[in-house]
Image (cartoon, rainbow, N blue to C red; front, side, top):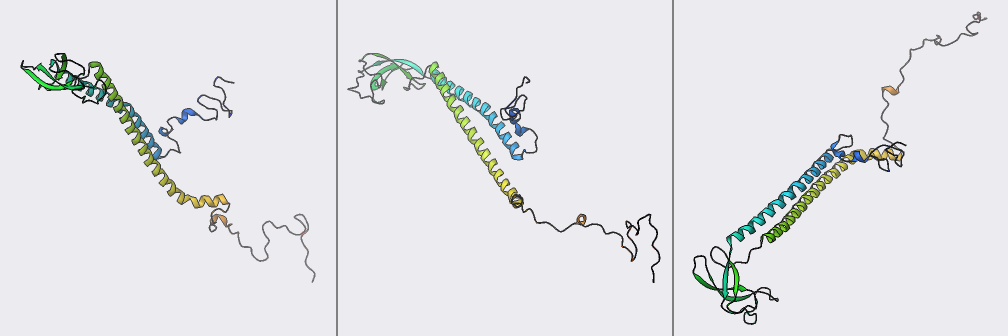
Length: 259
C-alpha cells in the first residue's frame, strides 16, 4: 500500500474520501470549465464571491466607521461640556422633592443650586441632584457652552465601550443584510433554472418517456440506405454468372436431344 492510502472503493490517491470522490475537485468546481457547468452556475459563483467580499470588507468598514463616529462624538461632548462646582440651597430630600428619574431608590431629585458661570456671574436654578444631600452641600454639575445643565458625559473608557458595542451592532446589521441579499439572488437564480428545466423537459420529455417504456419513437420512411441497389437485368435463356453447367465443369457437353 502506498503512502496515500486506499479508500473504501479501492481508489487510492490524495484528496479522495471514503466514497471515492475527489474532494479537492469539488471545491470551486463552478470556476473550472466542465461540460456540466451552466451559465447559472458561473453567476452563482460570482454571487458567492461578492458575498464573501462584502462580508469581510463591508462589516469591517461599518464597524470601524461606527466606532470612530461614536467615540469622536462622545469626546466632543466631553470637550464642549465642562464641570462646575455648585452649592445646594435646599436639602435634596426625596420626601420633599419626589424623584423624577425612574422613581427607584437612588434616583435623582430636583433641588435649587447656585453656581458661577463662565463669565464669573453667580446664577441659581433647579436641577437634578443626588438624593439625601443637606443644604449647603457641594455638588458637581455639568453645563454646556450656554451654561445650561446637561448630563455628565461618559468617561473615555465608557466612550470606548459604547463605541465597541455600536461597532458590533453595525457589523451584525451589515452582515445580515449581505446574507439576505445573497439568499435573494440565489432564489432568483434557482427560479431561472426551474423555468429553463421546464422548457427543456417540454421538448425532451415525450421522447424520454417513449424510450423508457420500450416503444421508442415512431419509425420514419426507409431511406436510400435501406433499399438494396438493383442488379443487371438477365436476358432470356442466359445463365447467371455463378451457374454451373450440367455435368459439372469437367463433364462432357450435353449431346443433341433426340427427336
